[in-house]
Image (cartoon, rainbow, N blue to C red; front, side):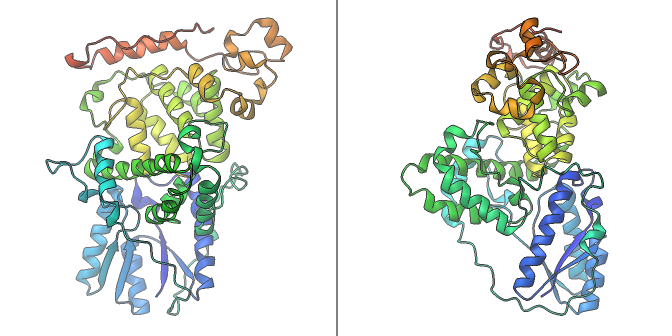
Length: 464
């Protein structure tokens, strides 16, 4: 057996891995090589093209078969189909395996035999089939490895940034199989019981943070399911663990949608949104990316993303809603930024999430569901711990004004040493006015069935 990693990010275009994914990949490959060496093998690293590299490696080593786990991104499905055909035509055995999902996307269908477009019935069918998911196999204690061919050094891939913007990553993440299992163990022991209540609190460590480990194959959903099963029997943990497994189901649903509707990586599933009147503005987009919108919860989330490669899911939804609806920027611009900056950047989940917020995807939130970031902040960061951590320039503000510094009296701002427009920006837009503009744009594409008025928002004036 020879373990081979081929680096060919260009084959994933136009959604090649971003800078944060490269950081994780470097450390994940190092961890994989260490695990293999403990078992008598090692990881061989090569550059693409993948097909040519596999053909030359097979010829050099005398290999007769090639095995890999399936992936479901459109570009990689096409690439792997070509590879499989070419290798078999050359007399080699070529096998792809199901290792990244509980169920292959094409095996879950609705009563009409079509792909699901709504999550709840999709997950209901999946839950009814969980008994089909066999237990994960244990890792071999020893691997019978052939003499490896010459590869290249991991450092030669230049995955780590030259400008060390990743200083906050190492303190938070432990890429690799051991890190994945340690993270799951810690979550199940400490957080699973309260997950249903705490998962929306960005100021609390209440989520699993397993997404990147799952994306890079360091732990499989089958392992997560099997290890979590015992926790379901623990007193007080059932509701939280079931809620957590539902999130695993959302990951499955994202891949189900990506496989069935591959065009949605770049196009809205709801074709009406191809005519939506976006207002692309590079300055607004840049301010959002930098966490300089003047809306505290949005800015805190965007800064968390830049410094850690991760953002709490509740804040992701709020930040995405603000970009799409209040700033009226194309959802694709946000999806591309997340793809570049998230360590857990997963094309299926990212696409489904952005289209859900934009109202143009499967099982999407109605467009008129526009998150009020001030109310969201008050509800989910009641102690202001999240805002104070990521917005130190506002930390001295009295608690009552931290969610809305733009409404604070001048004397309060002065006492806290905050100069709006200098130390912290004034809001890019008025929340109430921008909501109205977004709804007016939506009126142009809505159907007659959607003609009922949108729910009234609780309005708060914002200072420009």
